[in-house]
Amino acid sequence: MTAAVLKRLAVLLTTTLVTSVAAAPAAAAPASAELGWFVTESVGGTPVPPDAPPQTNSALPRSTDRAIASAEDELKEVCRSEHAEAAATQEGWLADRFSRCHIGHRKVELRCAGCTTVVASVEFDYTLIGVAQNGTRRVDFTLTFDNWTALGGQERETTPMRVDLSGCSSGLVTCSPGSGAREQLLSAWRLDPRFDITMTSVDNTGIGAEYLVNSLVELNMAITPVDPKTVPWVESDMTRAHVRFDSAGQVAGKHNGTVFSDFIPTFDLLALARADGNEQGVRESIQHIDDALHRVERTFPSFPLKTPPGEFKPSLGANQRPLHRLVDSTLLDRNRAYAGKVCEDVWGPGAATPNLNCDEFPFASTREGAYTGSSASNGDTNGWQTWHGSSRLIGELDNQESGRRYLNLGFYQPQRILNNDPFFVSIDR
Image (cartoon, rainbow, N blue to C red; front, side, top):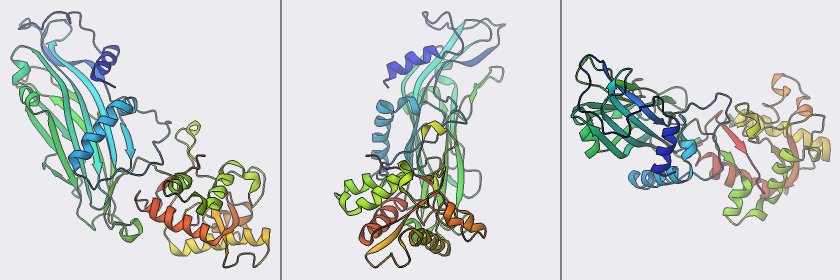
């Protein structure tokens, strides 16, 4: 979306109509009128409905090994040209677990309250880019202003404007600059329309075995007049980002890392295998997942109203049924054992051979597996019979390839999926 389109949208969303827009701002206001900075055009920051579905896709994460500036510039271009509608919401647009952006437009006028006299004004587009790192406990944010226009008296140049990103108050997250904020005159913002902030967390600090640190980052802006009698413009929570730092170790591939935890990735085995030219190598696993999600009558155990979880469905809104990663090796083994009961029941004892594996969906490495996702986990030894999943004999190489190469190395690790993290599953033919 171009700046011109943003401006046209802004007019539609004008919060206060000013009848004198055609004239240049006046040099002064009536002495008896109370002055204040008021927003008269606003785009960006629309709250996302609480019942809206989460953002997801099956794309591989953007590389964070390049220079931060290069990644941010590319993301800004894609964000504004291809995802402006999503980016203008309070949540912003999330490209993946490591990249996000938010855009908006503001026109703020200094005028007397309750009248149309305009003393000064400033108008701008803004873009906030966030890039998290898989490999270090670090996230970088860059705020840039474009199309900065100031009109009117000297207040347009001499009044301070403050920008800050919250999220460094926990003691476990450090900001650079230390305040997480920048304040300078409106004239200085015009000359230097960029604010960079880096947030870091010390390795192996935080909660639990994965050393988790969660931070809610919010963008706030304020025009703060020197004259205390002038009403300031203060806007909080213009956009927000949920950041998670961890030191989960080998289970996440790289020992340390940072993600935007409000993005839920999707595992698409077919897409990953096609990218490798290996679709035939895991065709049985692909078919099994496809049947479990779309042709449940072909799957076992068989019982009425069986509905395996995992697929993203926009119609469900916020009430999705994702899978959740499980890393406990004891529970993983139990999931495999109970999935094996299904294979034995259908194909007979000993049907699984060195060349045939009992494959399961939802995967043994999820909370929705045959043991942890059924009544078996509550002591029902026959819980596998009403498990909302599927077990099937498939070739050993196919099974091992889909699990190790694609689910673990190709998805869990690059997406930094930790214990109990949600994710969706898709087979998009």
